[in-house]
Image 1: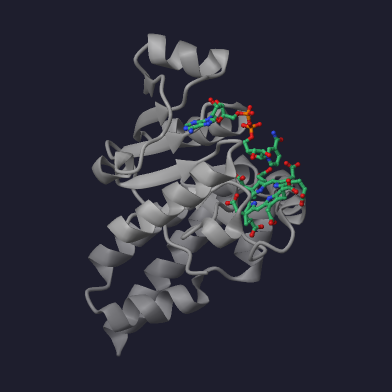
Image 2: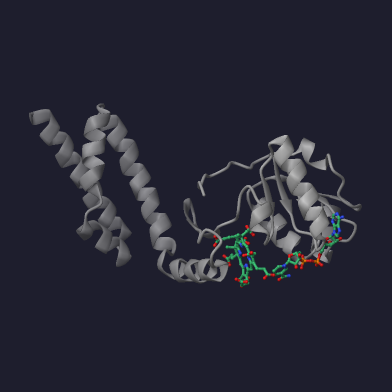
Length: 215
Ligand SMILES: C[C@@]1(CC(=O)O)c2cc3[nH]c(cc4nc(cc5[nH]c(cc(n2)[C@H]1CCC(=O)O)[C@@](C)(CC(=O)O)[C@@H]5CCC(=O)O)C(CC(=O)O)=C4CCC(=O)O)c(CCC(=O)O)c3CC(=O)O
Ligand SMILES: NC(=O)C1=CN([C@@H]2O[C@H](COP(=O)(O)OP(=O)(O)OC[C@H]3O[C@@H](n4cnc5c(N)ncnc54)[C@H](O)[C@@H]3O)[C@@H](O)[C@H]2O)C=CC1
């Protein structure tokens, strides 16, 4: 399985099915800013609310082969296996990525468990072997990678910008970053002293730049 990060903002995505699982998948697509259409004869109250408030479009009918053509990505979550097979076949034929919830053989992509903390994301897969273990890992990692790490990422981004300006050679920037995130700095992050960790990282950059100017 080849993990990628897809930008779904304003991209049309299709959810086939309107039950609780479809609702969960639609919620995740909404978080990503996708433009969502749900096709299903029946829908949960939440999906109906989202449709009423124009957060997504609900077409109250059964899936038909060809529906997938207008969409960038398809998620299928019905209780009818013949629908899953038809949608999977049609999507493959159209070259569209499809996830059929809980039927890995019919998926061209599967969904990882995701830890999200600001711009930091950790995606977990077990290659389909144990999704409950993915869920457990997500909960465990969520406890560790709390907002200390998203704040730290902002510091890293700031120093990275400064490194781009101060170190014109990409070889130098690589050399700097290879040693920049040292244990003493990352220990400070763990201890929630983000400001001091940021100062030390910036200081390291200044020293590195100086050493480059001297050589
Ligand atoms: C292959 C994959 C395809 C896909 O759906 O994308 C798939 C397949 C299947 N899931 C099944 C069941 C369960 N799935 C979960 C939970 C999650 N499942 C997710 C992903 C994936 N599930 C993909 C692989 C991910 C990987 O590689 O690890 C997560 C990570 C993401 C998400 O769904 O958004 C989300 C956790 C999110 C979170 O909490 O963060 C739980 C636990 C629970 O809900 O508490 C159970 C019950 C326990 C159990 O049965 O194991 C079954 C059997 C169905 C049956 O027997 O009826 C199959 C089918 C099969 O394995 O054949
Ligand atoms: N609910 C759960 O926790 C779990 C569910 N599953 C499986 O995931 C699938 C979906 O589960 P739920 O959302 O709970 O099911 P559900 O029974 O709540 O919803 C099924 C949805 O599929 C729609 N549907 C039926 N035929 C359709 C068609 N021809 N075209 C479009 N939509 C159609 C229905 O209108 C309904 O909205 C099922 O196969 C279920 O066995 C698997 C693991 C856990």
